[in-house]
Image (tube, rainbow, N blue to C red):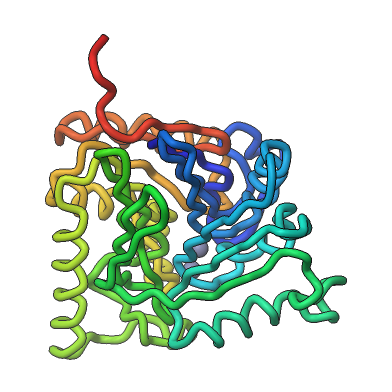
Length: 305
Ligand SMILES: [Zn+2]
Ligand SMILES: [Zn+2]
């Protein structure tokens, strides 16, 4: 199994001279099994280039599975520009954490309403299916076994552990640490003092995340903020690399990949972050990589040759 990063940015796309090397497109990762099965995690603007590649590779009608962490703009905006959707015979199954699959259809249908986009969802040649995921309810998609994990983000978000080809990786975005913000809290309300009940549910969420990440090879984690930025915007619902490291070290993960970079971080800043946390990880016995657009990683330790 290998994964490829098509968009590594959080919040909104930032193409331009300052982001040429790490990339300016928003969240999208492709996983491929050795047999060629594909699963796409998140549908940010990085999905557009992925779609173009998939159309070039197409040999006949295809079915694609798209796992959404949540439906904030930076995780769905690429979907209307995913070119396989315009190839007749294509099937696209969208899986997401929402109260009902028909609500998900309304969200995706909503962003392609005629005010926003020239072609409504019903007119798109591909056939769309919508599936609701629930934390703790595991399912199989071809060569992959998928475990949804509840995360701490305004209005909720879900991470995915994905097992395949004898190894595993996890996609943990978007999430705040498990100390400040509850998923049910409204963004504008900001962080509020936590009640005992809040503390218990956040503690339960953290424990469940640790259990699911136990021994996972590679964890891609929302590390949007540096610690000083996090202190100013805890209610945005994102983590720092230090918070990701803490979770990954506790879960005995082999490799952490920094992801969902703040749009304000230039390539120069990203170089500093990458070097700083690679060194921090070395001291803690964990490999820390920083994702960039176009990066492909094999999952699992390569057999010695
Ligand atoms: Zn996001
Ligand atoms: Zn979000």
